[in-house]
Amino acid sequence: DTAVSQTPKYLVTQMGNDKSIKCEQNLGHDTMYWYKQDSKKFLKIMFSYNNKELIINETVPNRFSPKSPDKAHLNLHINSLELGDSAVYFCASSSLNWTGNTGELFFGEGSRLTVL
Amino acid sequence: AQSVAQPEDQVNVAEGNPLTVKCTYSVSGNPYLFWYVQYPNRGLQFLLKYITGDNLVKGSYGFEAEFNKSQTSFHLKKPSALVSDSALYFCAVRRTGGFKTIFGAGTRLFVKA
Image 1 (spheres, rainbow over the protein chains, first blue to last red):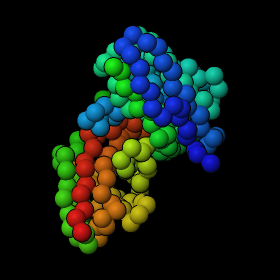
Image 2: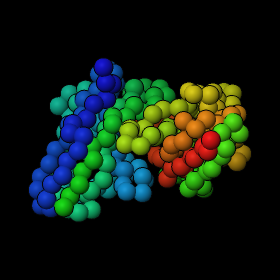
Image 3: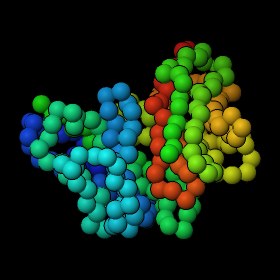
């Protein structure tokens, strides 16, 4: 039973299109994240939600919009895709909450987005 | 602000030899430090973490890491490398009380048979 699952695993699309990536975790965690890994494998944090509330919003173009319908799900919608959006997008979850704890991140397998 | 530096893009080691992958960090306050491993076309997997206490932390697959506060370092080590250890290794830091985990650029480990 996969702990953090993302769909789709691969996306190939044209510039200007809109696409969504979905993420679900069955670990009972309160906090979820989106990270972007570029072609040089550098990982950049994009967003984080804690119990459906946005708590981290890095300097990401507003074409990227996350949504968390409940604490087990975090989706990422991208409008007007550009060539530079091509990357692997990782969802992660953690037991971190406002009372602390030392929770490490549990990652999904990634969604590879290719914009042509 | 938080940052992590992994000074080596690549580390090469022969199977059976000890390995070290270096990491230094910068964070305000007390750090939580982590190592993750990524195999090709996979997500990152947690290896070990330092929270507080003993400076030598043991983790999965025989890996360990040593926290050095004065040098702000958290180097990953293994006494005897395996070919199957070949992968991309990431050091990460989060400040105590924060939600943001920042990753280093990664170090590719090659273990030769």
